[in-house]
Length: 328
Image (cartoon, helix red, strand yellow):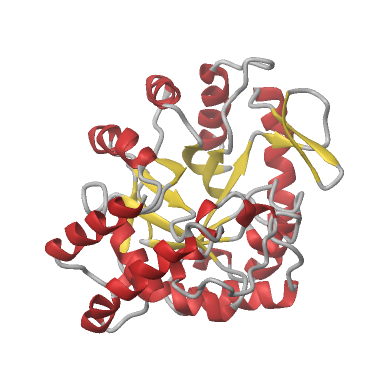
């Protein structure tokens, strides 16, 4: 597994991380087996994945609790990231969404984050978080200056509660505002070869300011594994229902890619999942893209990990991009 620096933080982590969204077991993904989730987290580390990402909103705290259980006695073996700014235990904030019988509120105020970080530390059974990420940015209904949010985060960093600051689901102006008010080491955005807009928007800024670009949903929530064909049963929970490539009119295009890239899979001795992960990791400046791949079974993490050790030739990277652009 390749290793990489996270921004300017001094933290070194695996180039491929494990995302713990699905193990939250909410309506986004459907029920999960907590025991299997713990085994998956341990298996990821055995295979060289050190970076583990979760969030309070994943299963309304449940993902963090499962991660906390998995890390008991093993905390030093992982680089742990979690998030802040989405709460379901307060009415203060701007409505993000209603889900699973609660209203998720966006609130990035210092007062709210002061409560939230302690909740996360308790669920995770740790006294520090390696990378603390502002999950979603403010809405006009409840504006909070980035200077206030960063003020809290810098204070938490000084106190040793966090080691690095990140932000997610940003606009260009959001990121420039964070940069103006303090060191930000990582941004996390939805990015895949079929959804490249955020990379085009942020790669330049990340290169300039020494920020790691971490992509989530690089496999388009499973469709780019190559395992889905027309007629293949799909558990279409909320997370997958938003991915157009699962629809009957688009899925055949994914099958075309699978067939076209069969020679590349043979060349590199890998699966389509491995190939896509390796391509994604090669974006940006070639060394500042971290690939966060979700998993909730040992088999899934075993499938994902190999992509972090493959170096694709430049010509293959370019041809894959051209192929992806032709269908998307």
